[in-house]
Structures are given as structure tokens and as C-alpha cells.
Length: 186
Image (tube, rainbow, N blue to C red; front, side, top):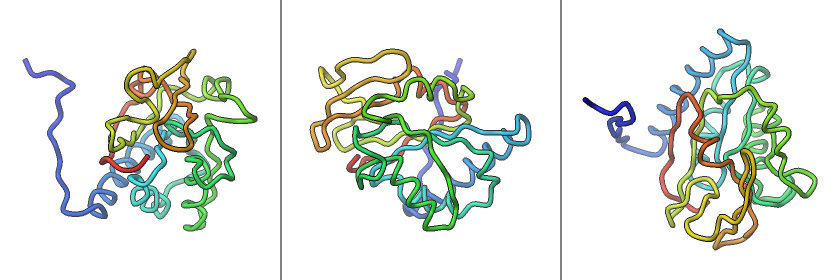
């Protein structure tokens, strides 16, 4: 019997081709969820690896007002900080004249657990980034994941800003569709 968790690897000729194809899959999934339930929950990474995907998604025709966006992880900085994943998503979508207001995992100097718990779970789509050191979201190996409760875990990154919060692996894997991106500086 073949495991339902095994999926074929799909290779693309360029980062733009990958972004275009993934954005189309994400669009179809979100559109179906909106058609069925009136909304869709989308979980996105920050960092450098997903920028082509985010730009392509921002140009995608969707009723964005029906899409709830949050991030897989966040640096413990204000949304206005250039390293904020939430801020990055807002800026990229704004460049394409699309207004989105993602739910930030870090708000007012603490994890935004309550806001995360009120979202319509499970997410329709979750895209996780993978760093050069092998971490996904801000889940680092060893003692770097220091504490957590519920759906959010604190972690200490080997790079700056060091303090991070991340959805737990359990929360991330509840998505109907889960994608990973190439290694990059997260």
C-alpha cells in the first residue's frame, strides 16, 4: 500500500515558473473554499524564498476581502520593522494595489495566541519556508525551541532578530494543503 503522505516531487525550470504554478494551485484552493464557506484561511511564510510567490499571489484575481491571512512564524518585532513577516506580506501586496491585513502572531509585545485560536481552522493552504540550516517556519532544531503553549512556540534563531514565535508543527500540519519552499535566508 502506498502511503497517502508520499507525493511526487515537481521540478520547475525557474523560480518564476514555480511561483506561477504554486500561486495558481493556491488560487484554486482558496477560490473553492470561498465558494463553499464564504472565506479561506491562508498561512504564508516570510523571508526571501517566498517573495516571488507572494508577488504572484498579489497579482492573482481573488476576492481578497474573503481571504484571512496569517504567517507561519514571526520575528518578535513591530509589524513596521523591515524584518517582520507580516509587514513584508502587507508591503508586497500593497505594491500590487491589494490591501490585506494579515493576523500577526506577535502583537503588543507578546504572542497573539487568542487571535490565532479564533481563526477558521483548518487553513485551506499553508506554505512553509525552509532555511539554509534546515529550519521550517521558526522551528529550529535542538534547544532553540524554548517554550510554547497552544498553537504558538517561542524560539531563538541563530540569526537576527533572534527572538521568534512560530506556529507549532501540529498547527502547521493541520492545513488542507501544505507546501514547502526552497531553502533561503528566513
